[in-house]
Length: 204
Image 1 (spheres, one colour):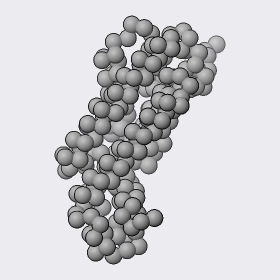
Image 2 (cartoon, rainbow, N blue to C red):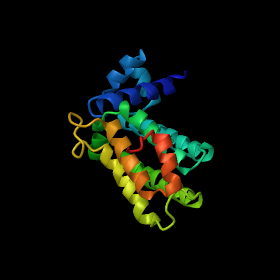
Image 3 (cartoon, rainbow, N blue to C red):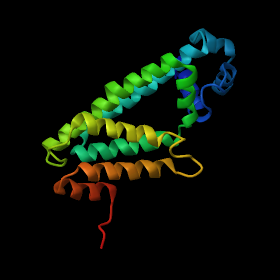
């Protein structure tokens, strides 16, 4: 692996675990097994490393969502796959990183907000359209309202004020809100698939 890619990989791992504020260039160099001078030869400062690392992370998310949209059997399969991906990603992400990016790195946070609008919100809307076409979602959904509602659900699941980590398990929260969301928009035909994909047991 090239030194530049190695630095980004290690930096992202540290940022995800400890947040961005508490991680120094020395920490990154130490974990890479190289000198701080070598790190600075590839990245002029910590901000450039944060920007490039976050962009790589967002590009990876975007690529996954696009692939899932293409390969999923149907809209519900796509939505559930995206939920599981988000849960796995969240398990290795300290929410402090997002808080610190928003507070101390506004330009980087702006890129994340653009991603939320251009990729996440767009993807949710396209999934809703697909589900309506497939007869799995109710045909009378207001796309603008429902898509934004879903995005707010996702944002809230990462919000430590809404779901304190000492009280709530984030994957469990994500599964609950996703099940509630799909069941709320699904047709009778869609409900059968929801129960199958989420392994929801029918009430006796």
